[in-house]
Image 1: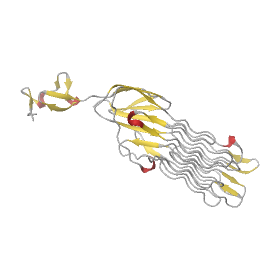
Image 2: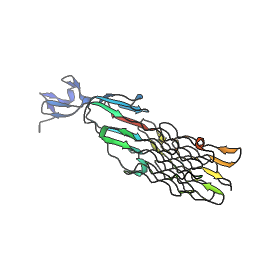
Image 3: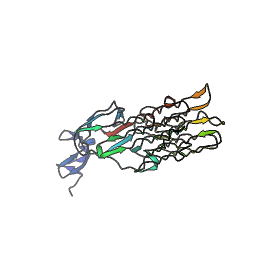
Length: 321
């Protein structure tokens, strides 16, 4: 092991640069050669921001992450799939799109743990942003090809009123509906939580809430539909933002029951309801680029429900010291 106190007879503390490289850009001295730190250089995304010594690429639509220099350091990432839609008529809330991440102490969907990423080669990497599911459809997957990170689209909420649509599994599961009582399960690897269950209750038809990245969708309670499961907060951009909430369960409340059942935090859609002629509201859509589920519909046909929110991909890496 060489003496690191001097390099070529010059005291290490007195060297500001070596071969044109500043001391802050080296990690070790190997003999008389300094080992240089390579910083990642890349382009792509709908926006590029800086947070201290880090760059943050945000993809809100599909595109290319172009790497021209592979850095010594790894990268942090967040991949959220499209949120689930809901079935026809009164319906369970849509499940949030799969939520997978590795960034400092931020948790991954469903309480899972994810490993840090590494960029192994230069070139073009095609990033896919999953669309939110429309009526009776799951959300679509989002893909970050670096280390093959794929998040699964959210499950659609079940549909009632004779439509016979069961809640689907997905990144987070869709909420159950009164005729198809069970909520959908969460995908594996763990990316979210299951949807809530439903049951008929007198002359009311309360549905379950869609699962969120941070919590299960609530079961119906008496005549009341279940709220959507909460999303998760991430600081990957430098500030805390919550995303991927489940949609609130919809209701036909002919015998009384809930209305305005909320979606989960992070953009989950609120429920729709139908109580009597002229007293109705459609479910709302999940917030775009959060992967949140749609709010469950009411007895008002296909137009009563919104779609799930589209997904998101964020890549963060160190570009200077």
